[in-house]
Amino acid sequence: MHPALQPLLENNRRWADKMTAQNPQHFQTLAKQHTPKYLWIGCSDARMPANELVGLAPGEVFVHRNIANLVNSSDMNVLSVIEYAVQVLKVEHIIVNGHYGCGGVNAALSPQPAPDMVEHWIRPIKKYHSRLRINLKELSDTEISNQLCEVNVIEQVRNICHIPVVQKAWRDGQPLSIHGLIYNIETGRLRDLNTSISDYKTAEAFVLRKIKPL
Ligand SMILES: [Zn+2]
Image 1: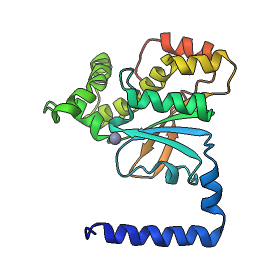
Image 2: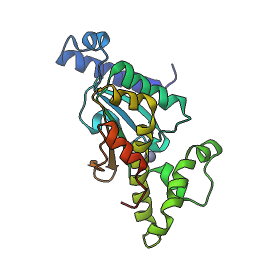
Image 3: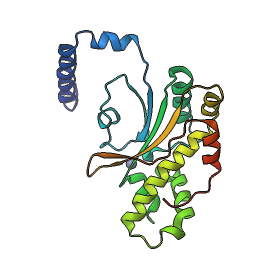
Image 4: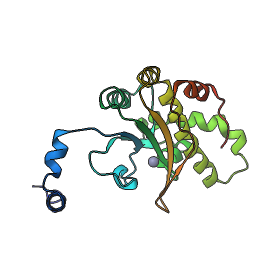
């Protein structure tokens, strides 16, 4: 075994033993069902473990993470996750979770190019920035970054509203809400960006609304 794996597997054994000690049926129960109510779309940043941040146990959150928590309409990965979550798991909430100081957002702001694929991936964020440049010109670099991190979350909520499987769920009366949260790595606190969308009509208005500074 590679020496790097040894401590991880030991941690895993201790964790599994602890969970089983708390509830001998814990893993058997989880193995029989997969019924999360939440889909979490977060940044890959290592400081943001989805379940832990919101105090939910394994089995309670379906998770997708990528650099800068983007929902891109040409990304089969995120689209299939959303489709499965909405159509099969019938999650009731999709949460987009961004964070201040996001490396992906900061890379989009930097004049230095990121590695090739990352540069390609974060291109949508550059588009948000160019739309907001006039409104941001009086702000410090940190304020611009923070605001763009928030805008980036809101834009992903907007993108999710466009996805056919989401629109179909609303038309069929399936309970489904999309939310935008932002996380502060320095305090450990999440903040609601007040972008919750729970029906087709509100989504339509939201999709059509002009982008403006927060
Ligand atoms: Zn990030």
